[in-house]
Image 1: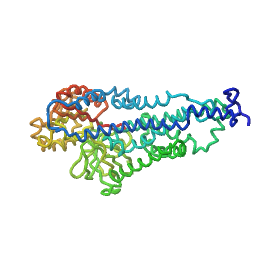
Image 2: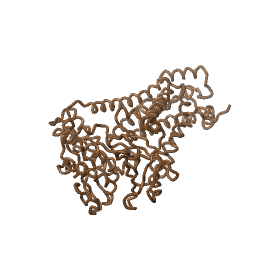
Image 3: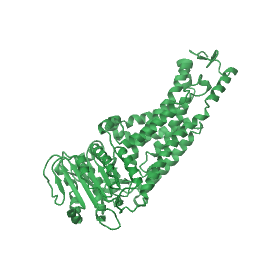
Image 4: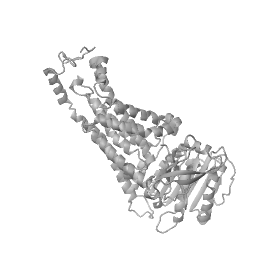
Length: 563
């Protein structure tokens, strides 16, 4: 066979024509002795060691705070561990400008960025610092750069699939809910894709260098396509393109529908590609075992297959509230559900007009729960447009999920800041925990909520709940143990009865609100709302860490719905 090119190396030896000769085999053995092919499996293990180490550290942190044996009622100065925690929170609670991070597709939290940066830098160093990148001839063995990057890419696969679940092993161990882990799922996916391309390109470069396009064409078709690495890299690239913010903005429902189809195609094709190579298939087996286990747990413990609600639909009463410009809806679902404050559910509507799945924060009641929904694009817009008059919907309820990783009752002071429909995350804390204020066995002494609105009419979203709070906890409102502030940014006067609550007809400075907090011994700040609000509260909470010493703790929890 005639080839267009045949690279010459080492005293006249050609990479193609001399393949199989004694001198060629001697050079091959020398190349393998210097850089053994089998040693490339170690690079996948190096990635796994780091990721498992991070999960272990998160598990220890979760265990320590969940089983904190200090009497939380005790006041006095902070202990050493509490001071060290405050020093770290002074950094990790800070937020970078959300507009810049949003455009770059990065989380604004400094803590998340530092963790992502650590994993990225560690992986890049292990991939690109070792040499050589290539062998003299491809016949001497696969390019070391290609093999080690391929093993590193495969090592990320179990974490990509594990982190994708609403209930997942990492979330169970670390106490971090799925919506907060989603940024790490995206990061692991991007690194998996990046190292997948780094794995692919050296093979094309080496074949082209040795024998030109003819050799490249020959090698491409020498292996069945279902065994080659082409299908998995295509599937993973399509997943990445579909996850881009600009794509999700306009075709989110299409992306959600195709997401799992592409993911399953990626998994199957990658399994064929790596089977029997450097034990890489063990990563794939671990992936499917853990992923299926957590999927079945979700179905039977949280989802539609739970014994108490096996594929049982519920009735949801939906109606528009407020003015047409607000595009707000109230949905009441008649399903008794045990839901902790700050948790959310996924609501799947079984309606001819609207059939989608979407997460919502929950306001629980005795015979069901209430949702406050703002119409934006996609599902919520379609639902709002279908509500020309109040009507019933058939729905399936999946959840609850999320919530605060810490026991909120163990804090002496709870401070909540929310904007717009973020009130649905904060209000349940008052309705559930206000009756604990002053109880001898519970350290909780004060609850304060600051709600920032655009228009005074928005108060009507939770008018019934405010009346209930006034009726149940009037004495706490008078004493100041329960303090509720409502801010109207448009400067309008109040439109409903807000007796007992502080109403302000101006746009507040969030930093000033946080500065006004009268910190107790242990403090929990909860934030739900716009990215701008979370950015300001995060930076303010970071500055409050300087108070630790006089107080024992300032803890921040933010609601995340960026997935």
